[in-house]
Image 1 (tube, helix red, strand yellow):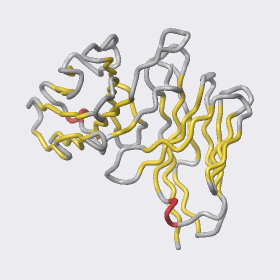
Image 2 (cartoon, each protein chain N blue to C red):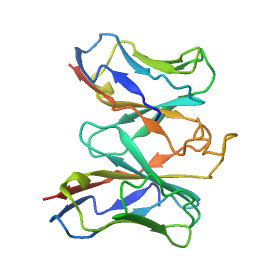
Image 3 (cartoon, helix red, strand yellow):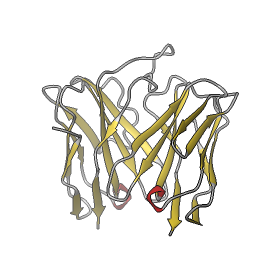
Image 4 (cartoon, rainbow over the protein chains, first blue to last red):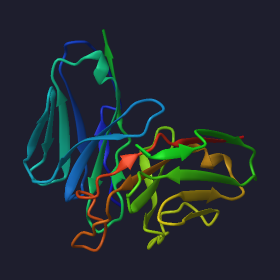
Length: 111
Length: 124
């Protein structure tokens, strides 16, 4: 069974601070996706990382895929209240259908 | 429609009753997926459809769960004799196409999924 561990599960910080969310597994994935989910809504895809060591930037968000394609991180610079939400990582590949999701990181940015 | 539409948005039922959850995918999307999101758990993949066909039903939690898709569009997820542990948010997603990977499974890198808002099921 492929498992993705996300940490921290909960994070509450002040506006303007930086933070990093981690997604780790003992399994190798062909790609990792990061989603953001707001209450009462479905997850929305932020980014897909495919190549080991790949770094992608989306404004203040930086996503990195580990060299061994087993882990990923999401770094947010100068967090804003609008960044508040549930951040989910999901792994693809290994012959399994669908995506394997982590349990998510609940992020609250306080003004 | 503009996005994936799910109905009802909320469903409260009594233990032992049957429920039917509906998903309207984005127009033109051939692939459709069902997930379950339980409190404190990640999204659990249940089943996918390519057109009206579901090649693998092994992700469904029990034989009380069934899903079908007709006309390559609307899909329904049916839960018979509901139990309290079935309480969760059931999410549907669709993608434009269904692309298989080299290992035979879905190539989720290319199958960009768009999610609906989900149906929150509460079994009392």
